Length: 182
View 1 (cartoon, rainbow, N blue to C red):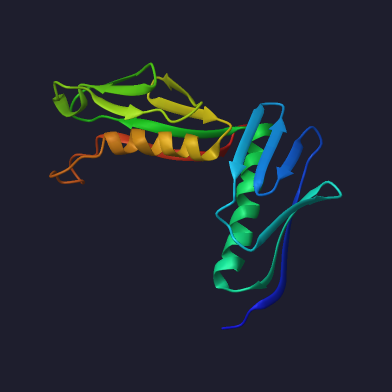
View 2: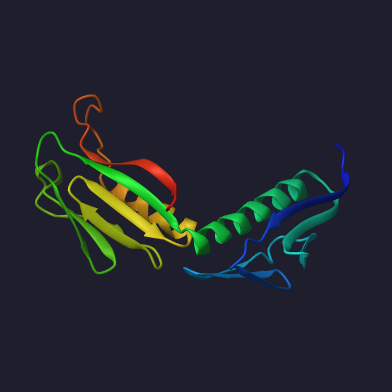
């Protein structure tokens, strides 16, 4: 096992975005909002600002520290994309047997008449995420990538079909597109 003596990753800060670092807490402020994240669990990693860049570095990095440096840099990059463009997941409603209806009520998505079931299936909306239903599409949008992705996963999991042949019962709500919202 070889250790890297010095490991460094840089994340560029675009104009219109403010990044502040207090210890291991990162705060990113942009035109769409503010995101905060605590990386204090990452022992041996150094975070600092330098010439319009966020620098993530580690000394004598083993496998775990190497992975952490890349992961933290990616999280900060995703936060910057979130406050500038935002994140969007698109899901498709596929019904072949029963006409299911999908609607947003409060902080959850209700899927009614799925496979002819009497009780509606429910999917929790995580964090400050906006869910809209347009025809056969469900659009999940927000600035926090993890909240948007978890909400989309909750919707997909709520319509998971158990104990049936997947080739026949293809009913469900499936993610078909994801990425930054333009």
